[in-house]
Image 1 (cartoon, rainbow, N blue to C red):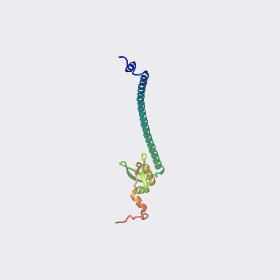
Image 2: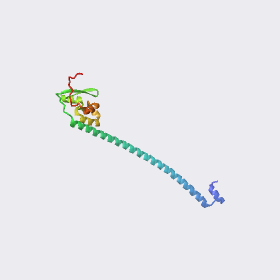
Image 3: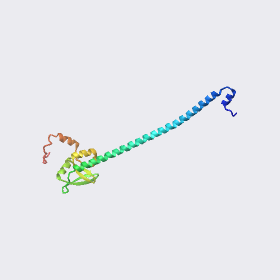
Image 4: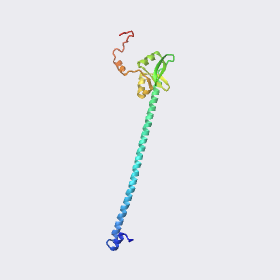
Length: 182
């Protein structure tokens, strides 16, 4: 009973030793091939996980770089705005007229010359925030600053409809009398 089926067939003479060896070799090779395929599956699975982890890492790095670039761009714009305000601000007159304006729900005031009050009212000048202080700047500079950071401009009395109308107004050079009664 201890004999295997192959050995029994060999003893009976139904098969030859060569045939038994070939069958053993085929079984051995198929067993080895199955082990290799299992190992290959494990390796492929590990490779897939490694590639996925690498792709996730690249994505995180890309997002981190994008955030850094955005932060750098914001800093550059803030510095550019600061330089524009510093180089184009108009001198305030401490003995002049108090001009009041709203900023963040609070009424603020700056002292400016009478001509500046008129310019602020007409939209030829604007008030910008420069750190804790307020500065008066020309409208052209205010336009540049608005493109970079609109939150810096506190007051600019411009009317886009009137700006286009005054450019095409044929009577823009004529003064309107103050005593005109309708």
